[in-house]
Image 1: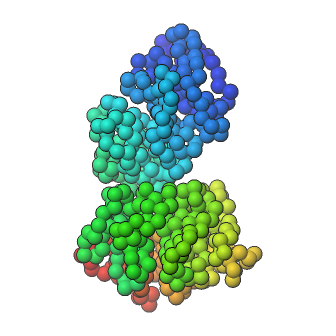
Image 2 (image 1 turned 120 degrees about the vertical axis):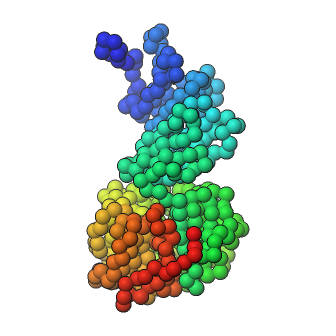
Length: 454
C-alpha cells in the first residue's frame, strides 16, 4: 500500500501466487484482494492485520471485484464465469449468476441495489442485490470480451467497454443510447419462399408485415425449417412458432437443414447439439466452449467457429476435427458450408475457404485464404447451388466465385453484422440500415428489394 502523502510503500502481506484484483471498502478501512491462489483476503492497514474471507476452486481464481457501498459484501467474478456475493461478516457466500467465459469486470450501483458484470462472452449483465432492482437480466453484448463496467452516479446508466475498443452506454431497460456499434437487430432468417424474419435485442420477432411475437429475452439467432420459425433466446431456449422446442444453455448460434433433417445449436459447455427434425434424442458433440457460429450442409456435415479463433468440421457420425486451432487467428464470427466446401470469417476480415473430403474427416481438408478485408465478417452464406459465397462485412455485401475465389459482385453499404440466404433472396442487418432484403442474381449487381419490414 502506498502512502499518498510521502509516496512510501507499506507491505501488508502476500498471496501464494500472483495478485489479480484489489478493492477498498467505501470507508477506506479495509482492503480486499484475491489472486491466482484462489484465496480472498481482507486487510486492515490501520491495525496491521488480515484474515482469509474465503476461496474459490483452485484454477478458477477471481478476475473482477467490487465492494458494496455499505461495505457489507464483496461482489466477485471468476475465471469460470461465476458471479458471487461474499458477506464481509463471514456469512456463507451466495451465487448471483453465471457468464459463459471468465468475468473480467464488476461494479455495484451507488445505492447498492444491483451489481453489473462484464465477461469474456461479451455480455453485460445486471444482478439484483435488492428486490427493488427487479430480475437479473442481460443489458446487451459486445462483439469481444468486456474489460470494464461502471455505473453512473444516479444509478440509471451503465457504461461498458470491450477489447474491440467499443464503448456502450446502457440504460436499465437494456437499450444502448450511445454506441460505436449499435446492434438492436441481432438475428435474421429467410424461409424457402423468400420471406424475411428478424430478431432484436429486446426480444421482438418480426416478419415483413411487422411484429409476430416477442420472446422473454433477447433473440440470439434465427432459422427456418420450411414450416416454422425457430428462435434462439439469450437464455438458451429454442422456440418454434412461439412454443418451447428445445434448450441448449449458453448457445450462441443456430442452424437448420431440411435436407439433412437436423437442427443444430452451438455454444456454452455442451459444445454442439444436434436434434433430428423428425423427433428423437439429441446428440451432443464436445467442442470449444466459446462457439459463436455454426452451419450444416445437406449431408449433415457441420462447421463451427469459436471466439478463440478455432474452426471445426463435424462429420455425419459426430466426429469433430479441428481444422484451425485456437489462438492462432482472431475470433471467428461467421461460418458457412455446402457440399464440398466450408468457409469461415474472422474479426479482422479474413475469409477462409475449406475444401472438404468426402467424409469430412479425411486428411484432405485443405484451408486457404479467400480474401482479407477490413473489419469483422458478420455473415457468410453459400448460394444454394454452391457456386458462390456471399459475405457481409464492414464495407457491404460481396459475392465470391467458388472455388477460384473471384470477386463477382460488391455492393458498398454501411457495415453489416448478419446475413441469411435462401431461395434467391439475401437478408442483411446493419446498425444504420436495419434490415435489408436483396434479390440475388449474380449476373448483375444485387439490388435491395423495397420492403415495409421494420
